[in-house]
Image 1 (cartoon, rainbow, N blue to C red):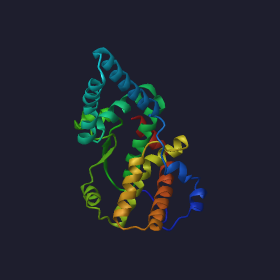
Image 2: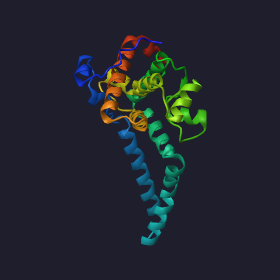
Image 3: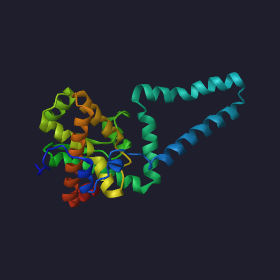
Image 4: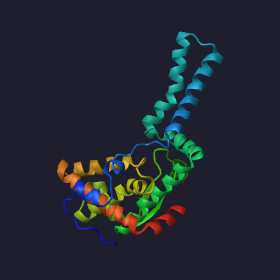
Length: 239
């Protein structure tokens, strides 16, 4: 296991001393997939209008056509949590945005590396929604890192974590956004990771103040690990 920074109540000033901007690291805003999402939406609108024009639909016909057209979208939300829509947007985004491809590779490699350094054995990771779908056959499963440490997975699933497990979980959760902050100046992906960590801390009964201390420690520890092992990280992302 890698050496960790001392566990104490770090402040915003401590983050600044480690050249960490929390607003850039902990508040990811997805910009890379914006164009891809708009193109998918535009294609859907064009298909709807084109079909309505081709079929010469009146008012009632348009309502029926709208219901028929949106039924697959509703079914995707209900059954797969929007997984098919995410698959389309992610696949198009990878085709038109080379930086997005690099960003995702580094993001997932960050999760993998920090998990290993924190003593959790990762089994692998997928880099796209399409890769995840091919591997698991389920559109609801998104790209990400998987672990073969059964004890860790069992503790996380139970919501009853030992202090050491919570520390590892917190650092792994922040590894992706920390990677993007270090490499690109701000995080875009990883909101689900942040939300999962917040939910875990809330479920454990942490006050807002105690949760903030946990997140700040994890952010500092994770950033230092990634800085110390930047070369390994780069090779992992390119593997």
